[in-house]
Length: 132
Image (tube, rainbow, N blue to C red; front, side, top):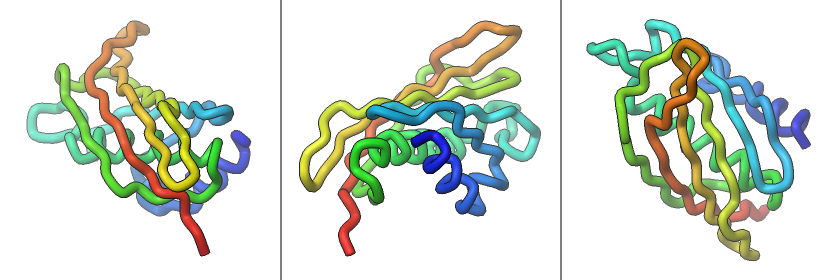
């Protein structure tokens, strides 16, 4: 499953540009790592909120794909808990409930600075199983 999700990730131009690295995927879970660089930050040097949202959207999608195949997000939300500052960001997602047509997934974003993880954002997504 990990190789399939990595192939999907590699096919997305935005994910390649951002540097999303899928490090785990299977059984309703997924993890993406993102090395920080200047192009991903906003004016104060934190990870840009849009990139944080993209991480949540993507990790929830990959999480859902591990149980349902092709999916499309119909809704997602993001909550910001602390400035996302560090050398690395880790997005971890898991399926909360998988139905026939919809999948509910949650995600957390951790900033890693000097080897320590700090929770900086969280979110959830409702995904539709793609048909046709």
